[in-house]
Figure 1 (tube, helix red, strand yellow):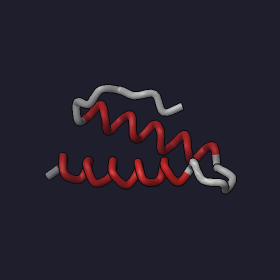
Figure 2: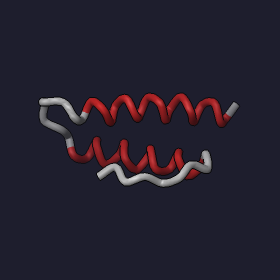
Figure 3: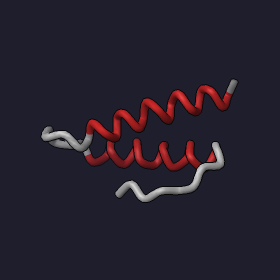
Figure 4: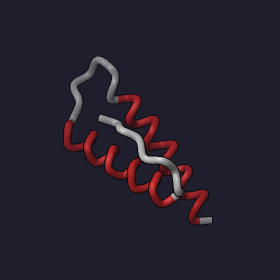
Length: 53
């Protein structure tokens, strides 16, 4: 069950990350928080790390 929750959170964070590419100003602190959590979840799920910067 924990893995499923992580996958759902990962999916939602990825959608949030995509939102940052829009024309609206980006809250850098929020963006950094999302990137850090995406990396944490990828590590917990055994996925390869990626560069999101």
